[in-house]
Image (cartoon, rainbow, N blue to C red; front, side, top):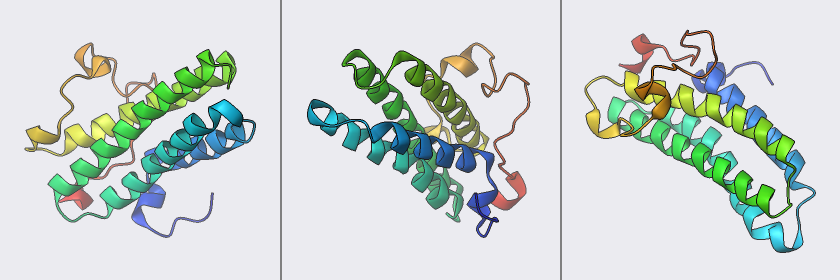
Length: 155
């Protein structure tokens, strides 16, 4: 990845989303025929993760920032479902699906923390996040917040 120019370039979750897009495009090159619609939707959703993180990080209001991060989170969950569809229809192999979903799990967890850190905006908080309901943190296994979100710059 290039030298950070914008604030979103410094976010771990943004860099992870760019890595996910890169891998998605690599895997999608082999998809055609009956998989083309799922492939196109997958690539749009994968790009949407990074695009909404960048857009949200540039928003001046916490409410708008929160909304963009929530949209990015939804796009990541959409990618997970599309990968499942592509796996059961023999578009991608189960190992690639598993690896991609592990990346997505980390991205979703980090975005969930970004949304939840937007204090005082309950309308943006995800209603049902099993990882947080059961105290599993951000999905990276170390119990630390590595989202790259800086509360001081968010206000």
